[in-house]
Each structure stands twice: as C-alpha cells, then as structure tokens.
Image 1 (cartoon, rainbow, N blue to C red):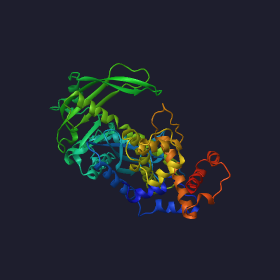
Image 2: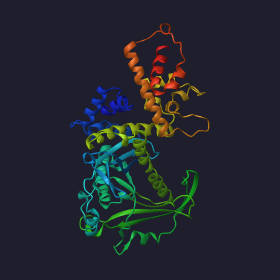
Image 3: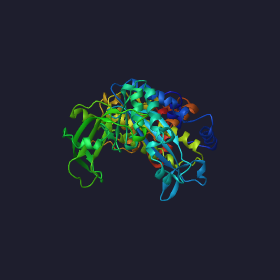
Image 4: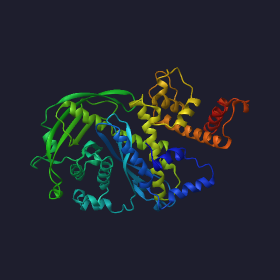
Length: 470
C-alpha cells in the first residue's frame, strides 16, 4: 500500500548508502531543498496509513508522544535548542508524533507529526512564578501540538468515532478533551492534575476515595533487571462531572468523563509500583470494560519503541547535517524506515499467516528464498509472512532456534538493511550483465566464506551470483 515518496524511501533510501560524492551531494540537495518539507516526504506515508486502517475493523488507537533529538554542533543556532541539561542549553529538535495501531498492537503507520525547536530559555522560570500556566491560552503554548495532531490524525482516518487518542500525563489537557468532543472522537489519557469535580467544591481524588473496589486484575510485568514478574491491580472507576480550570471556566464547558484507577496491591521489590489514573470519554460500565481500557493504554509504550528505532536503528542523532530544515527532512525519511521495521516485527506476531506480499516485494521474496535456506518448514509455512520475516531476521543475526522468542526490532533492522544492499547488488548486476547461463560462469571460490569474511558488502555479490547461476 505504499505510494509516492514512501515507495521511493523504501526502495532507495532504506540503506542510506550514497556510495560516492555525486550521490552524497544529491542527497544534500534533497534535504536542503526549500520546496521539500516533512509534509511532502510523509504525505504518501499518511495516505498509506489511511489505506491500511480501512482494511481493519474495530477501534484505531492513535498513540501520541514527544521525543527530542540531540546534536553537537559548532553553530547550534542553525538548529535550535530543546532545553537545558546540567545547566547547559542542549542543541536539538523536538518531534511530536502520532502512531496509529490496532487493538492488537499492529502499527498501521504515522497519522500526524510536528517538529520544532526552542529559541529562548532565559527568564522562563521567573515568568512561571508570575503567570499561572493554566490561564495562558492554549494557542500560545507548546501544548497546542497535542490538539493539532489530534485534529490532523482524526481527519486523516475520516472516521472520528473509531479513533481513540492515547497519551501520557503530558496529554492531560482540558482543551484536548473539549476538542475531542467537538470533532466526535475519543481519548484515553493518564492524568497528572487533580481537577475539580461535581459542583466544584471537591476534586476527582475526593470522589475516587469513596469508590469501592470493582475487581482485581493480574498482569505480567518485568522488574528492573528484566526478569518476569506479576502484578495484582485493584481496579476502581466512576463517571464524574469534570470542571475546566478556574481561569477557563467561562470559555470551556464541564464534561462528563470516566475516571479509572488501577493501583498495584502491595509493594514490589525491584521495580516501581504500578499506579495508573486514567481519564476517558469512553463508556466503562464493568470490570471487563475497565480492563480493556487499561490494556489499550498499556499499548502506549509502542510509540516509545518507534522512537527507539529512530534513534538506535536509524541513528538519527548521529547525522552531521547542519540546519534544522535538513535534519527535519532526514528524520521524516527515517520515520518511514523505522515504521516499516516496527510494522514487520509486529506483523510477524499478530498475523503470522498473512501472505508475504503483504510486506515484501517479489524480488525481496525471491532473494530471501535464495539467500536463506529453509529449516524443516512445511510447504504451507513457506507461503506466510512469518516465514519470510524470520529469514530477514536470520540475515540480521537471529538464530531461529526452537525455543527462541520471535525476532525483535534490532535483528529485523539489521536484516532489512542487509537485504537492501543485496537487492541493490542484484539489480545492478542484472542491469550490467543481463541473464547468465549456468554453464557460462565458473566459480572457483567459496562464496559463503567470502560473504562471512567481508559481510554486507559482499552479500550483494553473493545474491547476484546465486541468481545468475540458477
């Protein structure tokens, strides 16, 4: 379902190897072109996200989060700043992204994105002492990005009733709740503000203290060392009348929302205690409904995984581009690449029996069949996406032993990068030499040992010769 610039990125930029100075200059010109911005680069991807969403049923969970990219530059003013770290102003770019996923956690793609930097910090702390931030119009605050992304992503899917916008405590914004009601969409956020409730003489916390236990729920978690653990959650919920901040009560109406509290019973030894306080406009009438909303909110970490792929896989923060405009265009390209890695990882887990053509082209499938030998898979398994994702992971170092967990983002990233090199080598070879007869080529060396010795670079030659000698 890829279109336009997304197809170009998947086919040409995934490896990000320019090979020579001429191609490098061409890449620089692309990223610095004033007629190209992140909206142009991501436009095709947004359309494809919409297309993928139309093939699914049920709610679309839109995960919102903000991350920052830090850079070291001699002229940081050309990029901008993100904040202060250890008393020093940090050069970088902030990105607020909205990732659409199914209720099973399959990432459908990005639905909206915003980039910005900060120019001033001097005096901001003193200003907060004089002005109550809740009285500042939302249009004058960075928080407006939450509203802009909610509106853009809702418009993209053209089905506001299907969308559930999920955010952490930073998304506890009353204007966001009102906008969701205005456009007919839904939200599920973690609260950080004990808002006024009822008639205004008490708060949400006061009312929730009176709510009886609605049930218990066991969840599997990991402790600080990564070892498996279990948490027993006490669940409480109540529908309340929530009031806007005092300084904005003339502008915004009161809303009837449901508060869900999930608090872990006891005190865990090697991890933080789970204590979630969620706020939603969705109906919650039973313990089952409350658990469903908790499970949806638990999927919010997937957007953090997406950001991790951007930084660890694509290594966005290692770029040497000198201006914010160029870096934003580059990160926009990386976003598409990172989504594809994440998508294939989760596709293997959520719909392992899907056709391989769902995520791979015919040349990629053919190359994988030649490069990675089957290990006892029956004929039916060889026609599934799971079979080929495992092959990609094996290119990236995955051992695929019987008791190994499903491959993760790291090995799939490495495998896709290697497959891109191989595909490029095969395409160049086919263009230069055309079709070869098996008898016309004599091979007097061990290709496997050469590939092992020289790595990805020679893997392209290996794939090419394998094709030519068929």
